[in-house]
Image 1 (tube, rainbow, N blue to C red):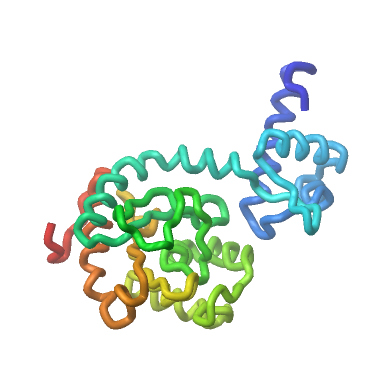
Image 2: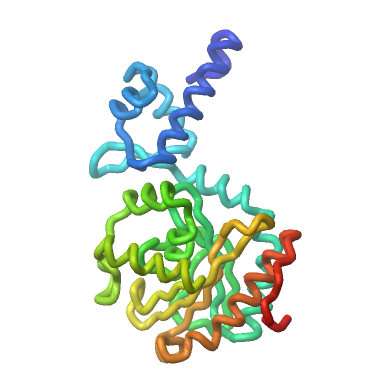
Length: 265
């Protein structure tokens, strides 16, 4: 796809087709082959091959070695991270305040495409060995933040997301049944918090709450992470008011002030 050559109309058509190909990956399945894209968009395989190779060269898609199919590439997630700057900026200071208050690692994650992605963090200087990097991909079925993002997604999006990953057993505590995961998500919706009971990593416990935007829509998940000797099923409830307080602060910083329901500021 050489944009320097050809008429203006053909260049615009090529760009439009390339963008349409990218949109294909936003619905299940999230890995597609040339034939699947060709049939879905009613384009010739030759045209799709040319466009997909150009997108691959630029990092917008990547080929999976095992099955030779394609999925969204790192550039898409980098652009997504840039697009959420309005959320990262107000959350950074709040995570640092929360980290100072409870002396535990604090994290913020959002949905980018079909992945739960860590976008901001604050960690104590003497943080324990499990340290997550910004841009880390979180398991929807095991992590507390992944469960929040999955539970509060629209039903159709939730189904697509659940079809996009395997219920892999990361620890003996990981939920590996779709039926049990759905029950867990129903509980998350009711109680408005989620737990990772050593489901992602042995010896690591997490609690998370939703973060809303100005319309009240859940746009992120805020969590605290600690060794299970420090944070566990017996005491996690003590940290929920802190999580909810800072979730409210982040929402307020995005120019929406909800009622605090008795939470001290």
